Image (tube, rainbow, N blue to C red; front, side, top):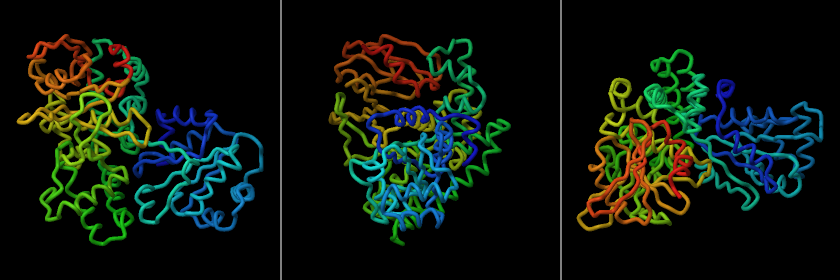
Length: 453
């Protein structure tokens, strides 16, 4: 993954700069799925420091530092010496990569905060969340903070493709209608390629999706090879493998744990396997809410939707890349599931909070099957989001949601330019429907800022 950031910047750099200047800064734990670019992001960020000290705790010499030194100031001095760096008082960034390989390194984060806060410390690691469970590692409570890094967004993709002007137009919500189709074409490319940095770099070299095949295969193999690290249980390893083999074809579907994807596994073991994989941030089980107002209370007893970390990988494994490339409206691919999946991916990427998650809405009325693809919290409101084209009158579930809520704004993601309609439900309630082109989903907060009082 090193070298990817030389091609394009990540939006997370801004979040890291905020962390750097914060008066309440604590050692930062960077979380994210394998190969989303954590190490490369920090390496790029380190260019803004006078001194960069990089420890990789997969290396014995680096790991042994935490076995030998118990005093944080003696440890810092030893790190300088090991890395052949002159001891200096300038701006210093210490990056502890693969930190899960040393429980003493994790414990030492407390003392960096309490006794050496002039050193800026970032920790990261592959499979960090799952290995914390397996190895019984816990981070010092109240002495660290967290940040999530997810696959690249559409605007980051545009930057990687050298489309700086279009990137700015999207980010400022100023895309003129004359280039709408061009942006939709770019978004279709993004759907095909996905947001994994290595895939974007491979695609950027010749704009040929076939050139990304080896990258996708490498990513999938690495996830499969990691399975034994997820759990100490041989039986659970088999369940996890079955999900990683068969689950991609169930993307954006409402799933049942019992016999998932045609397997013979029971609900309890399948549920546990999904929980473990979600900790590795490879997928999210998106549960429904019946709330039209804050707080959004998800119902964990209802069937969840399965969303994987990256739509490009879903397209590849499911064998539908040709469909995405050739269909007239991306909302029609795979019965709308790919459109819903990429929208969910963009919505999650809006936030770098580890706790961020997605929800969808289901009616709690007896006999009703009304369902809205996503709900998004904004300024104390629950904003419903549907992903589909078609006439406004056919958005029946959205109408039912708006009949039950107290505000007057809803969002429909589609393939046409940005517009706002005044819509009336069958019960006579009027609301504003923001028709949002796919390329603006990542700018949802800015769009809502324009239309929500």
